Image (cartoon, rainbow, N blue to C red; front, side, top):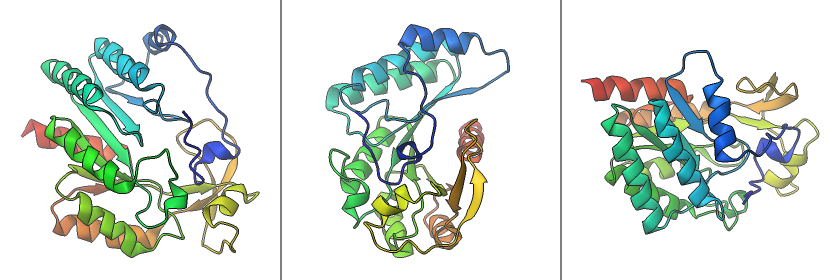
Length: 250
């Protein structure tokens, strides 16, 4: 299921990846010669959204053979059977000296048009984050992305609601197409006036140039709140992963 979030760059000029079966994915990974210590299960759709949930979990289990940390991100709600399978995958990962990072994305609290059904409500997503944490996964609240029409106070409210359920909080800038297709959906036709720079996406080979809203005002308020709540806050995944590894090593 593609959730078609109105703020997602796959709704504009982002080049979609080819769909591969699990054996094909494994062969692609085996062909990588550069050293790596983590595999992200993410991309231009939700790998755990129905009806792909079982396949997403099967992929995670198959990735155990590489002996690295695993990371996935989702907006889908997992049922009890899925959660038990995920817990077992995490236990297998930990037996190898590795961990599973479970990202749950929440972009709003009071602007439901930004995460329409069948996307889980933010309250459901935050509750699931707590179940991930209780099952031993490293639970990450992903405030993704920062949006110019969501008030700073709303992001702070999300953080407070998730403070006991999250191990880490990660924010993210917003990439919007220059043609304004995403602005139209995010702002529901209202004027889209916000500061932006023009950049390429730095985590992909896509050559499209995007409008980038960095949400510095949101970051400036979220970071000290997280510090007060003893929650590590980052704007990228890599420093969050390194923080978790240092903490677990102590």
